[in-house]
Image 1 (cartoon, rainbow, N blue to C red):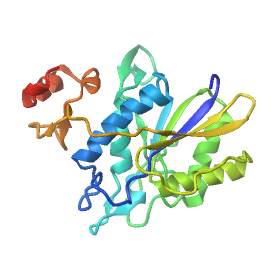
Image 2 (image 1 turned 30 degrees about the horizontal axis):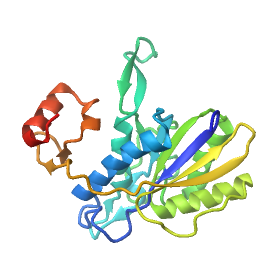
Image 3 (image 1 turned 120 degrees about the vertical axis):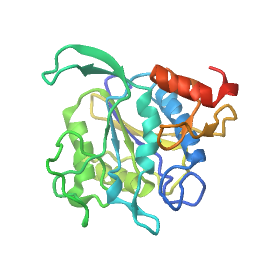
Length: 260
């Protein structure tokens, strides 16, 4: 919708049975990574229509502890990282904002809001007021404040939120109540491939649309260990574009049959 501000709460897969999440580490499995790769392309091409994202917000991992070891929930952050890589941004080579140059990989906001640090977690020496993420416990209504701040600014753009279904559904309901939109809200979890897009027109009229990515495994994507590269790496032609030459060479050497 031209001139609209959009907030896209992306997926809510993390607490449901399946093989996307490793139950011992709370990280994405190979299948979860493959889904996130496909979802990144879907968001970029089908939901945003090829446009660059204005801002990405993810769940602050330690606000949602998982597994028997109480590890931070990294799945929302890891899921949206693949989408972040596909966006173009303007960077600066100095602190004053001068000498801008084109870059890739949009930053992801996932820090704590003041007063929202979970019990037992080290308090940051300095808060970042402009890079706060989502809080699973929604302490002090921080999640609603984040979204209403976007809406109040009325700046046209695309804003992507990645969080568990519980966070997404509660946030949609609370924003609908606070703003008086009267939206038809989802009442149940519909699976890991569903994306919700809240669109606000310049007139203030709101609409909520859902997209079902219907993702299926891609046999061209293979996984393996690349020396000196943490986690696991994959070959994906779309994600090769923004990678450094050294990383491209390492991946091509690891997956010679994949081409590229």
